[in-house]
Image 1 (cartoon, one colour):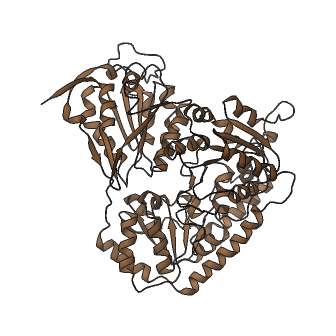
Image 2 (cartoon, rainbow, N blue to C red):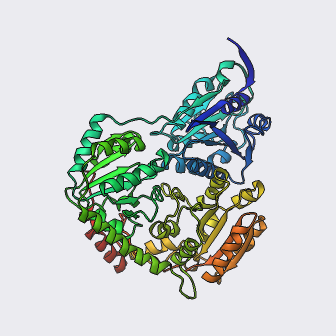
Image 3 (cartoon, rainbow, N blue to C red):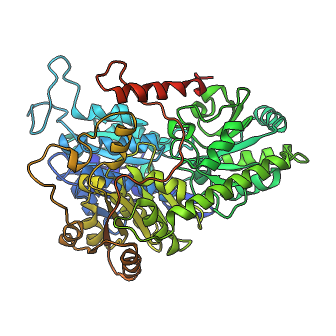
Length: 615
């Protein structure tokens, strides 16, 4: 057997470069970039190996381990899980900073490869700088935290272990049903150890994401259930995008007259102009989707994990006889709430179901009802997003301004706080696959890093990152990353004086305003206003503060023409929100000294009768 002598770090890098992917007949690199912050534990070995291959596998210098990994997650989503970024961090806090990003990737079922520095396998220098010690178990390291948030985890303590580990990690990263973050914990001394690796291990390998067809019996039974429906509804999730099934979804809805609602991750699977696209549903949804969902007798879930924000904590579907059909590559998701499972690729499953449903169509009155509800909700959205002079604009008016100036190729990015909900129920998709909200983990701080990662993936598209002042303060350093690498995006900072949407939840459940808005938090003297534009300029961005919608729209035009990241900060109203939404199950105190909390709990519990109890 022919061998080549390499260090563990060199072998990992060489293997990653050899991996390719066939996407629609075009062979591309599977791993296209590395985000790294070097420290002891990854700089001397892995860092040296990466430095030698910059023309083939470029390394992006991170500013924060969490945000660089979030950028990698966003990249994978933008590439629809077909190309992947790698992230590397050093021992201790460097690696543990990536745990949150790993949780985002796991929640959103997105592939990212994490190479984490670890302690010495020899243990001779223990405890090394930044090492935690567990007196009862010396095998535990900081990186064990990744086990809870990784789809694949392995601790590498000998250089030959990657011969079995790396191929398995790649297989998991490309698994349509089970993909998520893969974490390799690399002992820092072992990274530099040499081994005679088989040359065969580094030969180019072309991967394909296989489309698995659901069993005929599952498809037959699903078709029979759908044929029995008088009021069917489709719930389209992120899996529609990953399968590339947006056209098939539109055709399926048209052919059989079935209304469609989209989850947050599934948003923009259909264009707003599609006749039966009701867009939003659930806790943050508009009236149209929620009213149709209440009456649906068969719900066809496509590529969704059915999170509580979609199902209204399982209170949205109120027809006592409702049945669920779930198309999903993941068996676990397909079987939730006693659904009839169709385990397979969404694109193939929709085609197979279409053949089985030939000659059938949902009652015309049901489709007509959906169209009427859509028109009614659209009128509300038009009213709320239309410009009208007022001292402090609200989120809906800011969104309306962007909508009026949007192009079909523009990508809208959000993640946490009030903006995802306002965008979810008011944004009118004019381009397929252009609404990119991270709401599986609803990670504050994702927005700017996500726009940066999305831009790397789609350099010819304009990225609009909607970020609240709270998220901006949590994580903003990838503004500098975008300047450093030339990956421009437009950042819209809506400054409503703190965590306004959580303040809304707090007060709507009877609580006093406390510790969410700056004005109701512990402070010394008056609340100083933050100059977000000045802060962004200090990182090299172009920026401006605006106060009115007219000024905001003018700034949008300048931002679109700019040659670098452009930040527009606008003060927004902390108490004005778009109407709509469903019941949401949140914990409420059974004992309280506040009458308002007692009243809110009574109101909360009065709706619980609509909640499905697991079946």
